[in-house]
Length: 104
Length: 177
Image (cartoon, rainbow over all chains, first blue to last red; front, side, top):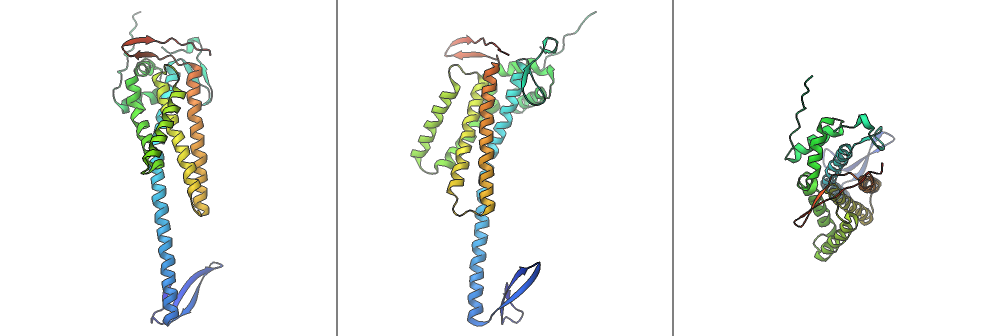
């Protein structure tokens, strides 16, 4: 999108069936209007993108603390169960260790 | 034949030290078990290990959910207090206290995900997908947190010396398994 080399025509480029097609809008007032409309659209898109980035970043910060808490809590549960004489069977159920298997 | 008693591991006093010890135990290092038991007996260690983190996580979510509205802020805190009381029950062990705090944090996360998804105005497909996946993931983690507490209660992990006021109460639990 932009003015051509001589600044006489405003053009828009778009992709059609994998090829770039340049559309000539025109010069003068028509070209100015099209350029302004495109600038507004571009600004809106940039603002949306930035808003989305901030939104995601805020969520990531919030979720990170819970993720760490989850990790610690899982570790604690595993350690508590091991200390109480259980073992995890194939990453699934916790089972009581048999006599010889007990670690004290 | 003379036998030598294996040297006992030192009890860690820092969060990283406790984490390293628990990681060794989780990998099956049975030499850590005596030290683990000692760590778990002391509520201060559990508080040091995850208490602060749980409080920070909860505060962040309460702030995000309530914004500047103090009445909403207080209402959420009151709801969390009720939840805590219901989940902890009578004489919770230090491990149970931390697991309850984690459940509370996960519940807040679920609410946050639901509200953000509900409030999104004209979301793009990508945004809607992100919100949906976050709702699913937070809900899954919340259920996993509840399951962990139920597991610890079911197997009645006996770790527990409670200091109620100035009186020491030793709680003896039985393992049904």
